[in-house]
Length: 240
Image (cartoon, rainbow, N blue to C red; front, side, top):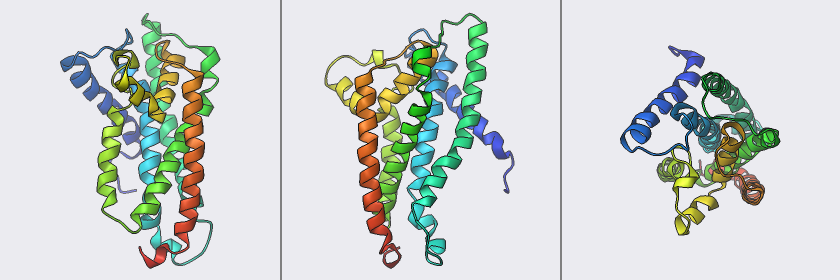
């Protein structure tokens, strides 16, 4: 409601982001994309990151944004962030469709891209992991910011830096073996992004161990987030 372009923003956002990535990282910084066409390489990473970050940022304000409704009627508060994560699938589907169109165009043009069927069947699991990580981090931040509002500023800064600690605008092959690569692999988003690139582009790093680590991280994070969320909801009206 009350927008100029409405749902077209779902398409404009990734397109403008990819163009900026091409200019800055592909054109000025001359970063490698492992032989993958730049628009396709950047779109693959950004589509998944947009879904994760939108889930995270929208659920991180659950208590503050819904304090009026929470104060009037009781219902399981966890329904709100879960509904937000599910509704964000609409935007994700539109942007994923854009990626598929772009992939088909480059494939028919003879680009060196291929689909790994054995891995692509795991795509629903990858999406579930993205949703779980976004929800887990989001409800943790939401629980903390009910009392300490200025944590939102720190949180926004961390999310911005987090994107560059994830191999979205650069391939993991660019990161030399050692402490830096270990730190990047400890990022639970890394194995998910790389698995998607490996499945849809034929390039990337795929490891069952790395995906298992990210899945375990997601489960623990969700359990911890739900416990803290349920504890905070009992008294959040006294502090919001």
